[in-house]
Image 1 (tube, rainbow, N blue to C red):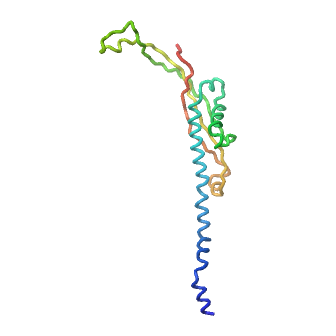
Image 2 (image 1 turned 45 degrees about the vertical axis):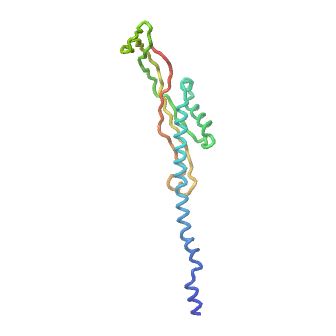
Image 3 (image 1 turned 135 degrees about the vertical axis):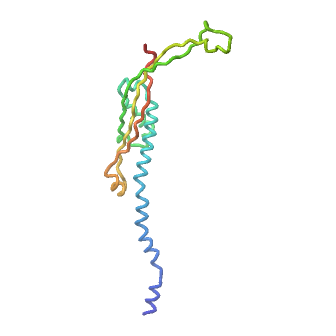
Length: 177
């Protein structure tokens, strides 16, 4: 009996199962913790890209008609609709201010033409001009729900992914006296 007990005691047949049972919970935790954080970072990158692209495509017609937010949402839907649930996208877009910019441009004048290359700029007339532009701001937010236990533990039942405020000047009109 002692010999049998000694053989059983020295046997290592169940060692790998015990090691696996100890390591498995640690591996599950290590693999599930970053899932929701990756989703947050991926969604934020996607929203920043969509905000940047949509603000570059917005024209003055959207400001005049008052459909700035819906036009931005439509651009997001057409470009990123397969990657984002547009029902959970919230667009904050509004015109901030309209400003007039004065500048001077130069026009060639044949009356001032001369053949002297050292006085080349004397052949041009200065003309004052101006244009108007409206500054618009766009910010996109998106509500997400965590899919893992760890995400809901640290992030709550839902969390909001938000882009920074993007600003762009949109040309609104030409010469104004």
